[in-house]
Image (cartoon, rainbow, N blue to C red; front, side, top):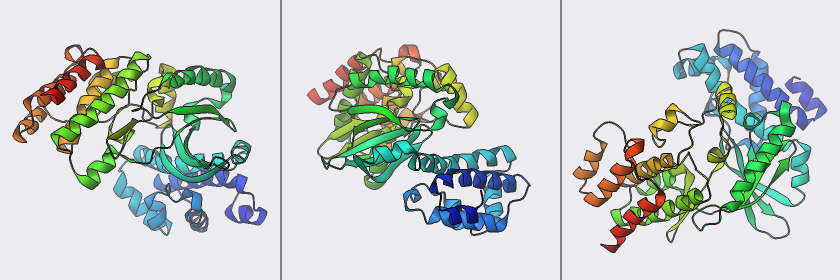
Length: 368
């Protein structure tokens, strides 16, 4: 369906199809093929004018007014056709997923009790919305999982597995973990409704306020490790701990979010997400053994991430290279803190065996 047909019929439910065609057209143009110039401009206008999409609109859609500008942009971003396809999919898929959700019957039913306020996050596993309950006037965060997270062609089995595993989340009841209230379906997509926490993630705090002093970083880690210890006691491993998954607010309030990866990643799901271009495990905060084997289940992988987070709170950068602990020494950081961080970041067999052991070591710092 073309733009003019959509506008003439006023069928918002056809917008996801139009966006899919937009993605195909961009991919053709980025890999040596062609795409209709007028179609590009019309769909671009439609995307930019949609208020629900403002936080998701890719920069290139905003700045590339025509296909020549898009062609120059994509050439600078990636030299190969394969990389260009990934870039386009990564940036357009979140918009498609939001519009598929927004135009579905389940979303309309959900809106009877909840008013959507804004999109507050998105990633490979789905989109997070802020909703307000119409009668209670209370805010909630609602994570709606992306299609890649489950298999629509085997939906009955997938949904049964999803909700069987989701029950584990309700075991988590700790002041340093975002509380889960509900799980269900919006249309054919699973969702989880949780506490809305008014704060910033640690990445945002580091960017706006700079690094933390030793005592403040120690208080933060006491809270964070305490939350992960509780999860481990319940048999739940996070497996994607990083500063952006830790929310903070004054005075000394910390909440761990996004346990979805630790709960649901299995070999089958990992393979499916990899094929779609979604990343499950990567980056400076994931333990080397987890990067090598993303389906590994070992609580000590979380302990590595906790050490990497602490290092980042003190230096502003994740640990990298062979002499990263020297940076802490140069900064004059307490040697006991350096030793704790170093042990967290050791090879698997040399790390702390549990968060209880790690928490005991951190608590001693407060006693000194």
